[in-house]
Amino acid sequence: MKTKITLLFLFIGCSIVATAQTLELSGELRPRFEANYGFGTAPTEDDVATFYVTQRSRINAGLYFKNYSFYVSFQDIRVWGSDNVASNTGTNFSTGTSGIHQAWGEFKFSPKSNVRVGRQVFSYDQQRLLSARNWNQAALSYDAVRFHTQVKDIQLDLAVSYNNDSDKGSNAGFGVDDFNMTRIEYRLRTLNFLHLKKDFSKTFSLSFLAMLTGYQKSDTCNVIYLMGTYGFYGAFRNEGLEAKFNAYYQNGKSQKGLDVSAFMATAELKYHLNKGGAGIGGDYFSGNDVKKHSNSNKEHNFDLLYGTRRGFLGYLNQYTLIKKDTKGGGLIDIYPNVYLKVCDKGKLDIAYHLFYLANPVVDPLSESRYLDGSLGSEIDITYTHTFSKSIELSGGCCYYVRNETFDKIKYENPNNAENPYFGWIMLTFKPSWKISH
Image (cartoon, rainbow, N blue to C red):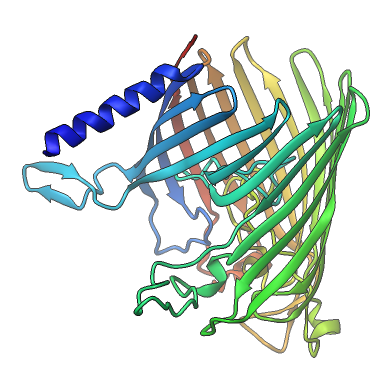
């Protein structure tokens, strides 16, 4: 009986594949060797560098029909040698490293309008607020319903989502509905957005993004703190000159239920030449000024939500959670950068970050004092060599020049602190195969 059912499903699957206009299969193998001495932390004299290899393995399949599509992506993320099923003669496998990265169905109303349902990747503009977070081997995807349409030079995307935990419905049909899978501030209860983009010319485009996000109040099942984020992204490029900017404002309720009034602003300017280029950028993320807001019930720290940090704020990830990593003071980052095409397929990038507190904060090691000004600097050097569309080799090194303010923000004694560094070498192999009829 089981054999007949299996054969039936195989027959149905083959029939569906046979009727598809396009079948696309692809994969990704991405091992990365890492040398870590303070990635995202402040090391001390007692710490030692660690060396390890992480790996992403993916298998992707897409079926594309005239009026609908289906896509699924399976992935396994692991550290070499971390398998939890092993013996003294070898490793077997790991029970907790595999899962679904994407699984969605897309239904077309017209050639330029569709709705996508399921687990999918959101990547908009510079990915400051909605990002694929691709450096992380697991990357980031969202369970949501997204509507997309395009009318001439205007694109509109609208997405809604609502998240819950596995206990929902487990209590005789009624769940506790409190979404306490982990620490509450780590999980968005709902993520919704409207993204509107218009190309004004071949050289200039402007995007508007409005987001409504919600966090569950801790230990409750009927209170969701909603926060709004609104703003613009602009991009201009004409011949060798390129400019980009972001400006966003947040209001509503924070994760802790406080009234929010926060903003971020970024700007980048770059000039491209035949064999390279140079530029400068600056980011500002608002925070709480303890001298002005010590008795305030408002939250002035801007929340980057699920946006990307690495790259924009340095490759050492010292400011992944800006509020936590600046003691609530907010952050300023100024970063001159250059790049050089060393050969037809090779590119060298160098960026230098100057970090500052946006507002003074209380010294965590001496509450009678304040900290402000510089948080130190970071230099990032990366090299990327593209052998083909399917094979790429990259590597880099990062070094942070700390100071006393940085040490105290990280709760470290300046006398014992060391300068963090991080290095990596990564191979990306992405074969693909497509058949259409």
